[in-house]
Amino acid sequence: MTLYHVQKCLAEAPRESPFAVTTLINAIGARSRERRYAGLQFCPLCLLEKPTFVRSWRLSFMTICDQHICCLSDRCSRCGSQVIPFQCRQSLTRCYRCGGMLSRMVDVSVGRALLYALQAQMMLSQAFVESVPLAGRPVSPPDFLRGCAVLLHAIKACLRTKQLTGPWGEVSGEGPRLEYLSVQRRVQLFALLGWLLENWPERCMAIANQIGLRQIHFEPCANRPAWIVEIVEQLTPRSRPPRKRWTATLTKGVRTIESNGGASCRSERAAVLLRAVRDYHGN
Image 1: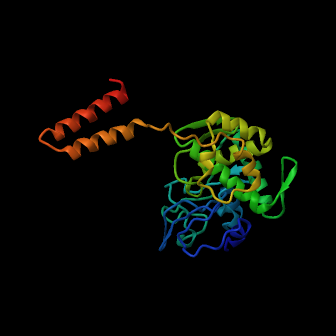
Image 2: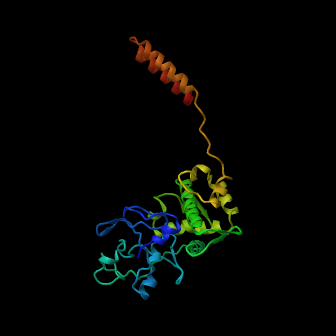
Image 3: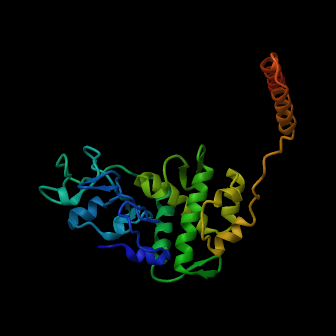
């Protein structure tokens, strides 16, 4: 029931702390017998046919059921509680809190984004078995999985205060990291990923120019694979803010007034600072 094979493919060591978050594995927030996050997903139709929670449902990119072609759920449709199977008093198909049927379908349609999300899900699932062909060349499983996570992290950081709309649906950069998001939010992100991988790297460069994706958005991500580095090198480098040389002169003038002292020291210093503020703002 462990997910160490995911950490092995990502070239990550098993986490020592049970509260640590692993890349591409949904966080459940285990705290005693409670769960703070809705990280355990399920397919209502699969749960109706066989009351068993599949291990792959814990993965962040698993958002679509490949058998019934429907979105997965992560909460009770009746009360909105997280899914905690070991606290179910009656059956695994019922909510532990209100007793509602988890196998009841809800309308979670995402339109055209569903096919792109399913395409990205199939490629990421393939990476656990063999190399993934991308732009006419094979990419090793660790590089592909880690590169997809890095790409989504950078795009999400760039869209922190924006929204992006296109054939993949609507994507927003608000909220925490990928492993904490709801299944509806992750469908949008992985639909965008599927759209980008369908015609790599032309579509990625088009999106980068559209949203202003720069090299600075990839800096927090360590161990970037080669196929991501090739894209990063083509982006606009980190632009330095213009140097404000007037600050050195202002600081020197204020320190001179303070060193001279006197009864009018404070009034002179205030006058110099106010004049600098007026000059900076232009009024």
